[in-house]
View 1 (cartoon, one colour):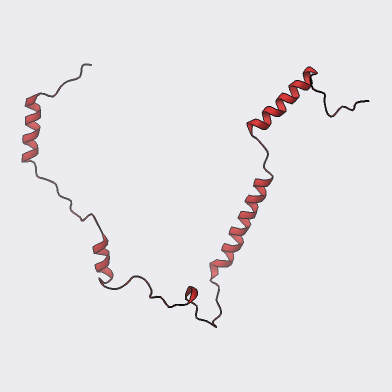
View 2: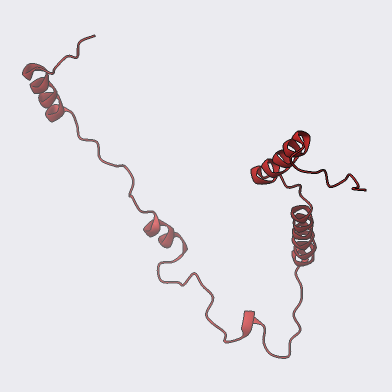
Amino acid sequence: MPSRLPTTATASTRAILRLHSPVSTPSRQLSTTRSLRSAHGEHESQYDPPTGWLWGIPPGKKYEKEGWEGLMLWGFGGSMLFGVVGYIFKPDTSIQTWALEEARRRLESEGILEDPEKKSE
């Protein structure tokens, strides 16, 4: 199928249509920061003021654990332990290990290399 080159008539028609069509302007702002600030107070800070205490706990007050902290500790720690044990005991499936075992097996079958399991008398 031959490619069709645009003629000057179609190019000029497109230009005229573009001039007479209404220009679409964005109906909303590109940034929503201003509208979010005005909903919550323009000049209020969204952060708590610094107290000077580590994690916001005054000296002498005992830290109270929240409900999710124990579950997070045991869940995350247990899954990490399970993953480490699984990684330690995973089988070696590398191509180098397979090639070394395959070469040793072929050399033993051809008689070039002695079988280490056979006892020499």
